[in-house]
Image (cartoon, rainbow, N blue to C red; front, side):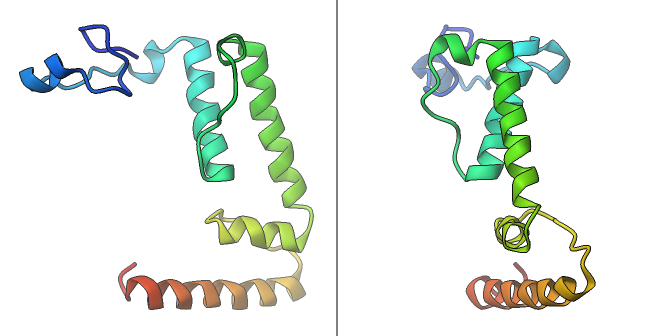
Length: 128
C-alpha cells in the first residue's frame, strides 16, 4: 500500500508527515483476493509464531496458490498441536483459547491456567 506520493506505508513519507496527512487504507472488500490472502497469512503466521513471515520472494508473495498453501500449512500445524496435551498447553501458553475435552487433563489444564494467571498478575498487576 502506498501513500499519495508513492511511498510504501511501511516507510514514512516526509511530505505526508509535513502535510499531516493520514494514510488511506482500503476496506477488506476493496482488497484484491491476493491482498486478502497476504493479510490473512501474515496475521495468522504472526499469531502462530509471534512474528511476521519472512523469506518469501515476490513471486511467492503474489501467488494466490502459494499463499493458500501457506495458510493451509498453518492450519495443519495448529491441528497437530491440538492432538496432544502438551501441544494444547503450548498453544494456551501463547494465548490461544483451546478447550480441554479429557476430564482428567482438564483439571491439570485449569491448574496450569491458574498458574499462568498468577504469573501475569505478579508481572503486570491485578488489572492485566
